Length: 494
Image 1 (cartoon, rainbow, N blue to C red):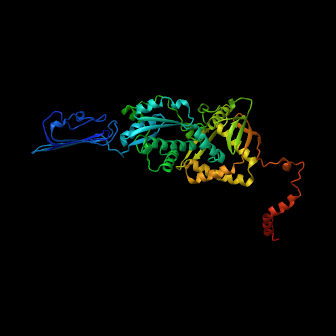
Image 2 (image 1 turned 120 degrees about the vertical axis):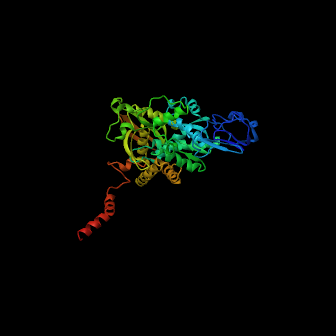
Image 3 (image 1 turned 45 degrees about the horizontal axis):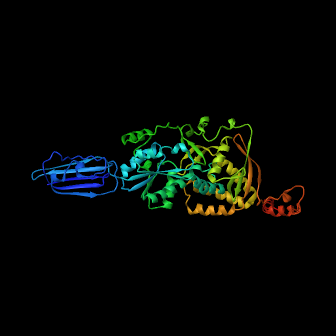
């Protein structure tokens, strides 16, 4: 009796032969597969060479390079039996049908494409979100993705959605993480992850994947969004699974799998750019004592090199949301883009900080947020006219928690959504305009006005006032200071 069994993860055909063997030089105990098997002849074996039954069984519906397969050959007769097993590569980690990968076209995500196919036996749909990172980063992506082995590239322009539904709510809430960070990357990840879930539904994918490292915050931000919007999706995070440890390993893997290696010059910094900000990490910045190099900055000029004359800009705001620049109404993305240009040429919005990552370690980052810095100054200044003291205090205290939730990737958490409803309601009267002066890295408020202003000149004036009687202050002070007065009397035995 003889049995030859071929099992391949890359093929849509499993072959099983049973019967006695006819002597034939074409029978082999090693089979190599580089594409979908359409016939028995492609294995170098004919069914007629066996006395028995040849069975072809379909196991999948896609074609891909052989990732993991085992070939077993058992040849024997009445007197002797010989068995040999050839394991070409390790078995699949898990069988997936189709994976949507967050794709940038860089080395890491280019390598992830064949790695997913090799380890999960799946088709890969690359997804790229345009959140204002720049046209250069989007050029040639489709060719790169397909050269890496992807079956499809999906690109979506999310700039308006990003600013309107993610940036502006954080701006309205006054969300700033650890006193400085304006949450540029934190706000971008949920809008990208949400779009990935949408694409997964559109293409019929059963999994999503990202190229975030196991040390950073972004892995949490992506995956919490996946969990919140579609808990049935499998999540693959290659950096937590594979043996690749660095750039050289990734290059070797790319060459081995015929993946074109990006030829762009490798930056010494790790950067993330979108319409709101540009972040810089790594290299000399890893030592908090080092001053950033002057040529590192890309969105803003050095304040020392900024114009010697200040520039004034007027921001129109409706219900806590910016709507115009210098009297001209603009779409959210266009408004922010214009302010980035204005603020950048005056060196506005540079932040250097050491922050506490969600995963427990501290990290040093330098951020450029020119337009965002201008907008935060404008909105907060207008609130000084439209909100009373208690409301501002409560809003500011909640803003800290709001920022923590966004930083931690909990955008779709019911708590953040409930807090956002409060922020929307409490700022419904924050309508008006603010004029700011930009000069060599500084933002100064020069004027503010609102139809809902709680400021009354006839009350606040030192000259006169019929509503406020200064003599009333004596009774107020006695009542307001009563607890302090009683304590002092107790200490003195009075």
